[in-house]
Image (cartoon, rainbow, N blue to C red; front, side, top):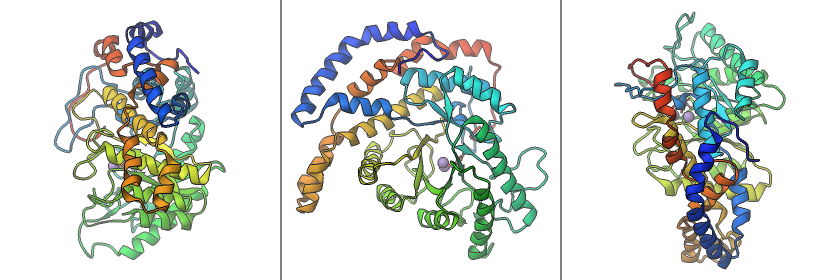
Length: 431
Ligand code: RM4
Ligand code: MN
Ligand code: MN
């Protein structure tokens, strides 16, 4: 439903669209004719794009940094309320990001019911909550230096479990339906820890968190092969993740962060495997060149993003109901985060749309007949389809902007906020 929710003036967006609607309509009609020759109904694809959404991370609207430095920009958000407003701007312009994924305690919410109300005014809801036991917080009784959910000390494990349960309780008040658990636990030296016993400790802690899940919640297990631990991590790969999820039970599923794999790993195949066993719970979208770089989705390898969505479309076709939690997980170090998130939503939505124009019957027939080249060409034809007019039309009809980044710049939002919001310090790190 088109709505006017959001901090930007709706008539400014309408004025922007007035300038672009002619060109968008022309391109949409031309693409419609092209797709019709392939027996694809463009309006049906547009409807699917309108129904598609991806959550934005609360931490992603602040300027990130490397471990070396952070370079703040004037007008960036300084508290959760300002972060929420920036998330609302993003959704108002792109209409694809109606939920926010919160990270605690980075973005602590003191009055969850009030915050939910605040989000509701913007037409926003909440996606999975994320716990944080990978760093110590001021005043925290016990340190996570030697691990959290897998620490050798029972008291540390209890504290980490309790933090996750606290996150679930806040999430319930926000209307979230899942908790994503990523830990930094692992080792930097061979022999530092028992690789076997640390996983046992994880399972015990994870069972305690799982036991605190409300009936309609999911627990998403996020793996990562390295960093901050560089020799071994406890939840290192999708194999460990799926075994843990199976041990825990049906409410536990795996979360795939695109940056958390060894170089050149076939992530789309991991997607196919996890979904085959009903354990694909969610995604953290970002892009990378070398490791967990947290670069903007689709900025480095848009083809891989497409292949991932192709597997997601296959999974949906095979299982009927399929509802993974899609989230963006990026660190915006050199751009205005709002622009990066708008650009990422466009890349993700574009990969989704391309996966919708694959001729799946033809693909299946070529696969069955072992016609390698035609199978490849079928997949490639969809990838080469410029779906931008579908995305633009879907956005405009939903109340968003024809060109979200341009409209954002025209709105003067950041310039205005630079007058109103207090400057943030430099420092380092993601928040
Ligand atoms: C981790 C992981 C988590 C994210 C933190 C900030 O590498 O991707 O999902 O919450 O970074
Ligand atoms: Mn992640
Ligand atoms: Mn990461």
